[in-house]
Amino acid sequence: MIDLRSDTVTRPNEAMRQAMYQAEVGDDVYGDDPTVNALQALICELTGKEAALFLPTGTQANLVALLTHCQRGDEYIVGQKAHNYMYEAGGAAVLGSIQPQPLDMADDGSLPLDKVAAAIKIDDIHFARTRLLSLENTHSGKVLPLEYLKKAFEFTREKGLALHIDGARIMNAAVALDVPLSEITRYCDTLTLCLSKGLGAPVGSLLVGSKEYIHRANRWRKMTGGGMRQSGILAAAGIYALENNVQRLKEDHDNAKWLEQQLRGIGLEIAVPGAQTNILYVRQSAEQAAKLGPWMREHGVIISSGPLTRIITHINISRQDLQKVVDLWQRFLTNQA
Ligand SMILES: *Cc1c(COP(=O)(O)O)cnc(C)c1O
Image (cartoon, rainbow, N blue to C red; front, side):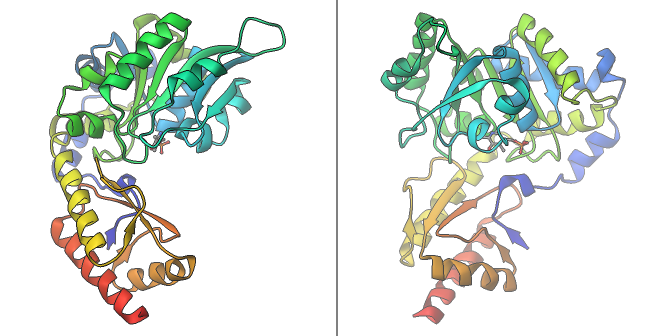
């Protein structure tokens, strides 16, 4: 099956499985797993941060990040459609008594700083205490401009806020900008990233920040059930991913750009034109969307067909696969006409 629903569907290849099989392990709750420690050291090197923590999922990494930044009755400013506001089951509010202050995102995924400034609460007993600005990079495949990140970081210094980046796909951003990851992460206090998306590892996310911050985060990881034992087996996949699967993300981006052109060529409407990374959105009528999904599946293609259909390219999708998808889609449209 050609599965275009997400880059989370990627499967570990033989070499990654070998690395997992051969991983040296220990009990990571004691800090004794050499492979987890090596992965954490590697991401510190790549981000220029002091310390890191390996966690099972991006959702848990974001939750632990928020729990570490904010106390009960604090708030974080976040995008209306950000993952750590909208798609994490309200974890920060439910489990941390942390109030989100959502704001509309601009088309490029940024939060306009004048709007952020207006949302910061003054010190008054009526208000929650604004502690944190949380940005997402990439968001819907859009890369935050470095110039914006720099301004946002300086802004948070002036306002006494911390800056967190939900960088589930931050490596896609670094590859799209053709800069070292540290060029992006210099403009944040903390960062989460997923190894289990385009990077192709089966499981795992990372939280990075200062030594002092990660020391406190480690308690929250334990409390939320994320303290794993011989997790070096999983971390080995993460190391393999960071060493072998980063630069190849460019292929996914090129594929998304190519697919965008092809789909436009057969008359489809691209919702947010100009794919920067590995995500595309196609707009279609609800009626057509309802037919397309099952039809594609019959022909070996899985897509989340809806009025706004998200398509994600990844390591298990080749240009040939995409050619097949274009041909099928064209046939589908011809049949409909
Ligand atoms: C996928 C994703 C997450 C969460 O990762 P999981 O590992 O699926 O829990 C967080 N933020 C963003 C932007 C994501 O795309």
